[in-house]
Length: 108
Length: 118
Image 1 (cartoon, chains in turn blue, purple):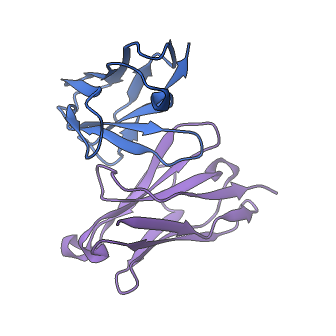
Image 2: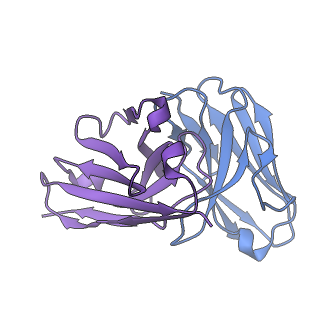
């Protein structure tokens, strides 16, 4: 099973600032990596797939990079609606599909 | 518009069974793999399993934590996916989401809460 590790667990950022979230895989997942955003009481929303491709309707301030075992989600200028929990997920080696533990982006 | 609606959650005692349903609309259900993902209270996301479309044999895959206890099935004539949960444990307490597709999850239901407690 591929273990996905996200850091930091919590990120405190001021609106308008840049946020950088990390995700590490225990073995290579190539570029088969997705990012999701989840707000309280809501289902997750797909943001990024194939490590760097934005899903339909996702604003350009969200960008993904990386391959192999190291990945980054960057939010270039945080908006109020971006404060949420973010999860990475690998779909290279399955079953099982595996998620990271999440990074909570909170208002500083 | 793609819609997925889960139902069937509730309070159940340890060792008992429960069946969840996921009713979909807005796409050709029979053409897609359907997955279940769960989230324990205050915790992260955990993949439960999926069922492939009939085109790919309608076969299933499960997480080790639920294999042998949970069964995913589908009724393409009704556009419904099911999650049969047997021998439930307290650690199965979670919101259960159904999602479209088997690898990437662009479409999710609103989730249904299953609480396993005596």
